[in-house]
Length: 346
Ligand SMILES: Nc1nc2c(ncn2[C@@H]2O[C@H](COP(=O)(O)OP(=O)(O)OP(=O)(O)O)[C@@H](O)[C@H]2O)c(=O)[nH]1
Ligand SMILES: [Zn+2]
Image (cartoon, rainbow, N blue to C red; front, top):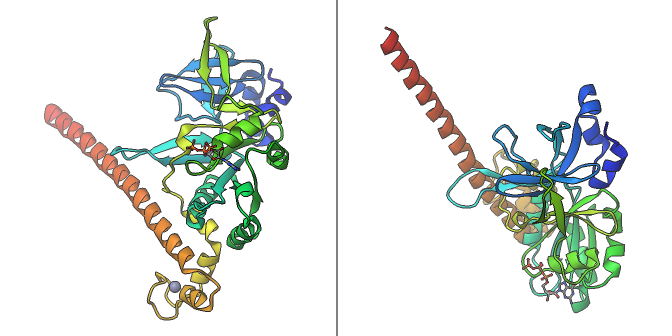
C-alpha cells in the first residue's frame, strides 16, 4: 500500500486522495508525470521514477498529471486535474493541446524596462485565471529602473487583490521573497515573453548558474537507465518547477471565464449598459463608455478586452466547427454502413 505522506513532496494533496476508491486506496499506485516523450512518459512515484509506454487506451496526458498504475506498472486511470493549461495546437490542425496540469501558481513575469506592457499582462492574467492556477505577477529588472513603485501601483489598479512583486531575478534573495509559493509540493510555472528573465529566475531558484533544468537517470522498467530531460524539477525549497517549452506561446481559446475574471470591472459595468448585447462602442447608454469618459477606465484596457474576446471567440469557434464537422462525418459514415447493410440484407 502506498505511503501517501511520501507523495506530498510531489504535490499530492487531499484533492487527489479523495478521488480514490477503496480498492484503489489499497491496490493502486499514484504517480506524477514528470516528463513526456514521443512514445513514453516518465512518472515519479513514492519510491522511484520509471518510464511507461504510451498506449491508445490511455487518456490524453500531460506533464503534471497524477495517474494511477497497478503493481505491474500498468495504467489504470487519470485523476481529475486541479488546474490545466491548454492551447490551440499550432499549425492548420485544429485541436486543443494540453500544456501542463496541476499547477498551483503561475508566476507571470513582465520586465520593467521599455518592454513593460499592461495589455500583455492582461492576456496572461486571462490565461492563468482560466487554468484555475493562482496568478502572481513578477515585475522583473527592478534594479534597472526607478519607477518600480509606480508600476506596482499601476498593476494593482488592474486588480487590487493580485499579488505583485518587483524583483531582480539575479538576486539570491528573490528565492526568499517567492518562498510563500515555493514550499514543499507546490507546483509553479513561469510565464512571460522572451527576455523577461525566466531562465535567470529558474537558475536563481535552482541555485545554479549552469543548468536550465535537472537531468535525471531513470529506470525504463527493464533495468536499463536512461538520461532524460525532465520538465518537473524539484527546487531546493521543495517547490516543483514545471518547465515545459509549450508554456511559452499561448493563444487564448476556451478562456471566456478567464477573460471575465481578468476584466471583472468591465463585465460589471457591462451589466449596467442599456442594451444587453452592448458592444461598448457607439451605443447610447453604454456604462463602459461612461467609465472611459469619467476617467475610471482606460481606452487601452477596453480595447484589449475586446481584442482578447475576439481572439478567444475565433479560436474557440474554429475548434467547435471542427468538432461539428467530425460529428457529421461520423454520422455520414454510420448512415453509409447502415444503407449498405440494408441493401445487402434487403
Ligand atoms: N538587471 C537585470 N537583468 C535581468 C533580470 N532578469 C533578467 N535579466 C537579463 O535579461 C536577459 C534575458 O533574461 P533571460 O532569463 O534569458 O530571459 P528569458 O525569459 O528566459 O528569455 P527566453 O529564454 O528568450 O524566453 C539576460 O541578459 C538576463 O541577465 C533582472 O531582474 N535584472
Ligand atoms: Zn456598453
